[in-house]
Picture 1 (cartoon, rainbow, N blue to C red):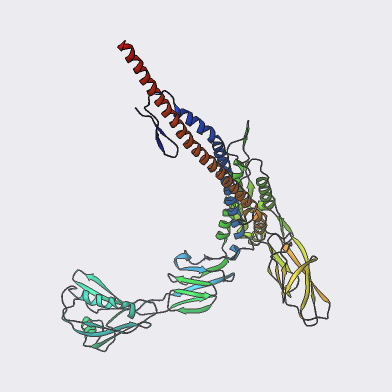
Picture 2: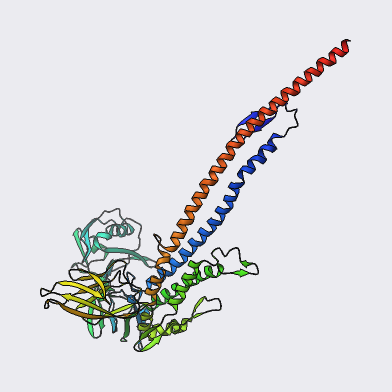
Length: 559
């Protein structure tokens, strides 16, 4: 019987008759495992590094969420949440203003309060057959052509044949309603008859109907013999409202931009009552943005707590970043920003004044009632707490853009202008600014990188210096974005660099591991072939020994 030996590469060898008790496979397996010991050690190291990468990626994601939420509340947002507008309706004479009008506003709407009275709604034009028609499905025996349109529609000829029923006529009218602006509705007006109703698709639009060939509309009872409508159910009319006493008419009940950025939808007249429309800050949007920041912080806080957890044996297994200086510095940066104060009209405020507090595990909590009261009573304070503000002491220096991490305080901008009005040099608190025509910019690498000012002062005597003071009030949103910038930068941030470094180390270790495995596989192939040859030689020796013994046994028998 032959022995089969297969290497790790899948190569199979036949190693003799199988009569030997020599176990080469066990020797091969032990030798290969010894070679692979280094690879297994690297596998364990890669697992540890992968866990660290996952932890750093989670930290980066959580801090990015905080930065994004803070940016929404900062002066760096593309569209400031504090500029969002909302419409608030109230009335002492109308029981439910929302049943009368709805108001929508956009960020271009000016803050203000307006008094509105809805006198009448816009209505569509509706006419009907003067008498009921008994049968809606039988051929009516009418033939001819008529045209229909509303004022903004296009007059279109509709041809009727004798075999068409009342339902067919209604369908023919509706087939071209997109062009004419006139629709047909067939109503079962009694047990014994039907009424055909024509309506303008748009309010404030009158219907024009003409029998152009024959007298189909007159026979139906839509038109009288003089061409007028036989039964006008409702005349077309415009909506009429007053805003602060000014009368406004509209052919539609949806009045767009009745005020800049303000549109109204009318549902009912106000029955002589008035409704107050207040255009104010969208406090719900601000509250939602603040809540999003708190939620993002608490998500990160959960991660930070886990990575600072210990037991009697030290850091727990899940505390992958325990003791890491980057984790500690990020935590410190967050706490520092959340502890900031601002001054508004001589009064100092903190986040506690918005209802913020920490629980026993340093998770943020918000008292919704306190926050709501601050948003209603002191929206300027809420905005100042989050959004950096920079004011100029002179109308000749316009602040176009500033870095969000500028500390609160006064900054002196010095501008030298020649007699032709050209800016020759400029600086802020002694640090040179780059000059391009009228624009002054903070140089890269300085504390004022990202600043952009525009000076519109006129000419002066050569060497004259204009001095303007910029006053900066810090905002938590801007400060938070600035504090986290080095952590959330996915190009060259401190966390991304750690991830990249670990990934490079993993790649290097994986290459070493693969080389060890390849060498072990080659060694296994060598041993498989080597022991196959040994077993073959042993089997041949055993065969030869058996033959010799057989010969000697034969000689003994012959004697």
